[in-house]
Image (cartoon, rainbow, N blue to C red; front, side):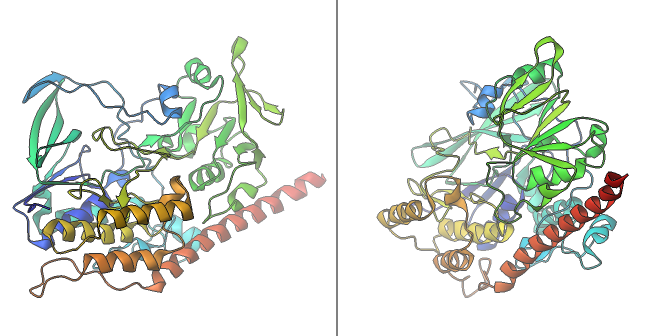
Length: 479
């Protein structure tokens, strides 16, 4: 691989932030340029200042093509009218959102997340609650970006719209909003680190009548990333779709304000492997199977389910159904079965090792995994890590497909965390003798232990709420 001196990083969420630090500490690059389409660092932890736009183009969201490339000028620099196409850059933050993972496994190895607990988390989990308010996480990421002047490397409000290899260098096409116009230009690099995240483009399944339901009352169909707190749903009749943690959080949150019960579409669907279905056992939540169709004729707002039952007069359907991988700026990189194939150790693009990914994994110890991946990427680009042959990289992927499947499950490191962390650490190697490079510590079982214990704390709180609700309901039922 030719010497790498100019590196582009896409994104300043937790993956991008740690990638900047890892690259800088290698002290091997002449240029590190970082592009972030939002106004500041934090990624999905950066709270929006404006309301979320209504969902549109349901067909594309259902087919996982909701974030297509936009038209690019034929020459640069250029100015064009500001695009009106949804880019799904909004976050899923709401005012009282807390982490659902212990702060220890969310911390990077050289700086713990501050021990600041909100009154809400203390009321739920006690004075030693391991969870943190979303603002603490956002500030933590921001502090890493601002350390050692890294913010000078970042161009904010700048969207990466195309990344393509031309000869031996990467051409990066950039767009920045400038009043009523978009300003376009290009920059060139020897390597690109993609840390743009994959919690952007909502997945909403194809359901007969869903778009008609939204058209009849704009804003009636929402994704969990649009949820901004319970107050907007007072007295509403609600259906929540999804069996994982975002749907669980929202369904439990809404039982105190909704015109009950809250209908939760979980029957026949696999619950989250970490959190199970405890939250949905609340007596004010009525569980349902998949939606078959939605009837809006003659002003009806009736949701029909595959078991033949139905619920009339529904005000909102909220989908906690996850996200679709999207790389509109890399049309040459395939996305298959909602994952990015051809990534060795989920990091190295096998067809070109100057294209690397940080964050292309599923849930579980993610911040620490990002750190290990970032150091590996930086070491490869500095020439201090030795990758196996392409054939060995391909075999790693083939073997993993046999074990995990060619599906999103491929990206789940769980339960083999120790093996993954140690493998990546071994490939990355140690810093140089004169201290160049970020050092990765050995695997620590405490990270996994407290990670799993945190889930048990959450489930304990849900069980307590379920029992409390049943206790309040039973006396009334006897009257």
